[in-house]
Amino acid sequence: MGILRVIGRGTIAIFAVIGRISIFSANGLYHCVTPPFYPRLILRQMIEIGYYSLPVVGLTAIFTGMVLALQSYSGFAFAGEAAIANVVVWGITRELGPVLAGLMVAGRIGAAMAAEIGTMRVTEQIDALTTLSTNPFKYLVAPRLIAAVAMLPLLVLVADVIGVLGGFIVSVYDFGFNPTTYLKSTWTSLDTLGFVSGLVKAAVFGFLVALMGTYHGYNSKGGAQGVGQATTNAVVSASILLLLFNFIITAMFFAV
Amino acid sequence: MTQDRNTAKIEVRDLHKSFGSKHVLQGLNLSIEAGKSLAVIGGSGTGKSVLIKNIIGLMEPDSGAILIDGEDVVGMSVAERERVTRKFGMLFQGAALFDSLPVWENVAFGLMQSQGMNRREAREAALEAMVQVGLETDIADRSPAELSGGMQKRAGLARAIATKPEILFFDEPTTGLDPIMGSVIDNLIVKSVRELGATALSITHDMASARRIADNIAMIYEGRIVWHGPVSEIDHSGNEMLDQFIHGRSDGPIQLRVAG
Ligand SMILES: Nc1ncnc2c1ncn2[C@@H]1O[C@H](COP(=O)(O)OP(=O)(O)O)[C@@H](O)[C@H]1O
Ligand SMILES: [Mg+2]
Image (tube, rainbow over all chains, first blue to last red; front, side, top):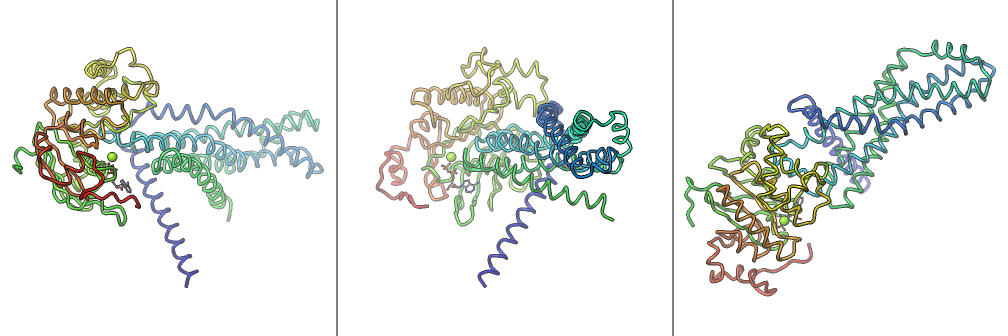
């Protein structure tokens, strides 16, 4: 009996959390599409998410591209440069570009959102918004969701280019491949479906990161410790959800 | 105590609010006449903030009615509720200034967001409100984090009065300030409320402050108002609970339950 009760309780708790997050995100989405809008706030978030994440995303991408080239060379050297270009392009655009950029942004932006909104919660700034006739969902949640969904695909586009460049650098300067043929193979291996799936993933990951950041911040309680907890929860839950949705989206695009 | 519905600006009827098994408000009744200032006093954790949050709409009561100008706001639609909220201004316990915005934008926030004033006009109005509460206008572009506690309270007050609300709420306005600064803030509150002709509801456990800012006092205990009357009568009310609270005695009808 005891074990059934534990399982039952756990199941109920999980569904309660899923329910709360669903309501929160439906609410957030509703406020993304109904006025008033806050263009200044959206722009500020876009700069924060898009521009200031460039260095970390770029560095992640270039090393990943380089390592992909090294690994595939050690594995498929016999298959020639076309195979290596192919592995790099597919690996970066389909999986590693969006996933690594998403994880980096989860650490950088998800944490910052949870900390900022969590601090606003425990210092009653969110209550103050309401008393000043401003809906906190419109003012805090919607701009972050919009900015993250818009900026993540752009970041991933940059990551794709830099990642492929990383593979190119290793292939040309380390393995001595002919740059023109390598680029040509890169171009022919680039497939629309794989590329588009990567950008779709990016948009979904952006939504998940902003959703977890705002959700945990918004619901944080109990002073500085609560805010710290919210920050950790935001990053961990965003990362796990991101990997789960990466699998789901990949299955939707490529599983027949 | 009159219960004349025509003059009550705020009326709370049989308000209940629980958190889990903790029954915080247990059928609370309260009414404030237009243009009067009421201070609700009571110990820490007795539900003063919960009461204010229910009235403002930051929390939904479990049952009961809250009438603002005779309109019951419980269960109102979001849009209707927003119309009522425009009558409110509130000074929060920790000032609750937005730390992402400079001081003047904090003060001008309600003007720009809910009254649609443009930035230049709003800045002028904000500077005016800052002068009213004794803030130097050269701090307008500073971040709230750079201000002292007293200055933050002043800025919070300026933000609350900038939209010229009909009803002002003050949550522990003097908590965390030294006694002199506390009395300065109290005097500013009295002056602001008078100039606006507003109705005021303050909650506090600071009796000196309550005496300064209120026309009437209501004492909350175990989720109900146990005494309500003019400030001039509190010293000879004959109410044991009120007496115990005013004199800060540890023995009497009010028992502190330390274990929660
Ligand atoms: N959001 C909440 N969730 C659960 N309990 C709460 C919440 N807000 C207040 N309480 C509880 O209600 C009681 C009254 O709190 P409060 O109104 O803040 O007291 P005070 O009179 O000091 O302002 C406290 O016991 C507090 O723990
Ligand atoms: Mg309180």
